[in-house]
Every structure is written in structure tokens, then in C-alpha cells.
Image 1 (cartoon, one colour):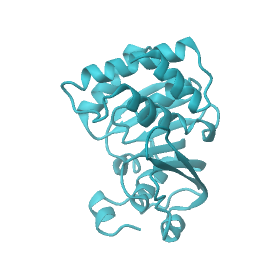
Image 2 (spheres, rainbow, N blue to C red):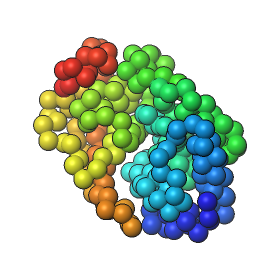
Image 3 (spheres, helix red, strand yellow):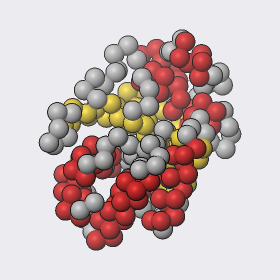
Length: 233
């Protein structure tokens, strides 16, 4: 990847450009493209589109994540947004969660190649981690992009967030917040704000849905995935 594309993405996201950040990002994307030749990690392989739709889109979360947060990226995939955020926010303690072993293997290799600390990949499912006392009510921030519809995402994500923490759901033009009141009430969350933005050089309108967790998750949540899909809150 060309450095100028990374620099432009950083500037458009309002992030300070430094040689270390640019170099690490280029190394990350070059490794991603190389592994993607044999493992399906992303369908976006054009450098300019990666710069906009992966990097800049991930970095738009930065102003909304408190300093030194413990962060979990649910369905991290190729590392967007979680690993991209870690590169520009070394203060974060990041957990990258994905249910596909090949993807967490890639994330492990990328973390090692980039020489990053306080970041790890976990192979697992959010509905299982949400019942594990090591992870339940633990994280200051949960982020998720292109995982599932918002009511189901709340049930998968909020059990992992500690009271007072945030879920930042990355959505498209439709922020999916209509009819969300019941799910928020059951899961002890509150809609804080919705932030809309457009990605340059694309026709994509994006939404950041920011939800605050008010109280510990009731013990009956999260349910099994089959129940979540059959009867979403």
C-alpha cells in the first residue's frame, strides 16, 4: 500500500500523522493483502478503497473512545475496526473476537508482525463469552461493524460491556434504531447519540450508534444464538 493513501485516510479521520503510524499501517495492509490471496479476509483489495472503506471508516471511531479503554471488537474479521484502531491508539487494551479460526490466525500473525502489545485475538462467539465471568461486564467499550441487526447485536455485545461503558455499533445509512426501546430496556442500555458521516469518494453514508450500558446485564442474557435469531428483542 502506498503511504500517501494512509496519510490521506489519517488526515480525513482527523488523526495526527506520524511515521510510526504510517509504517505500521502499510505493514498491516500489505500483510492482509498477501494473506488474502489464500484466505478470504476481505473482498476490498484496491488500495484506495481500503484506505477509505476500511481504514478511515475504522478511525472515525477514535474521538468517541475514552483514553486507555479496554476495548473488544466483536466480529473483528480482518481487523477492522479493532486492529486498525490499536495502530493509531496505542493507549487502548484491545481484544479482537471472531468465530472463524482462519481469521483469528491472521490476526495473531498481524499482531506479531506489527510488534503490538496489549492486544490479542480470541477465537470464540460473543454469546458464549458473554456468559464467561472472565469477559462478562468487563470491557469499557465494545465495537462492531457489519455483524448483525442492531437488536441482536445489543444482546451479543452489551453483556461484555461494564456498567458505564459504551457499545459503538457501525451501521449504514439506516442506523437501525427504530423500535429499539424494548431491547435497550431489557439489556440495561441507553441510546446516547447517532453520528452520521459520508466516506469520501464513495456513495456510502455511515452511522455510528453509541449506546451506554447503565447496569449489569440480567442473568438471562445473552441467550443462545438460535433463540436470538428466532425471537430478537
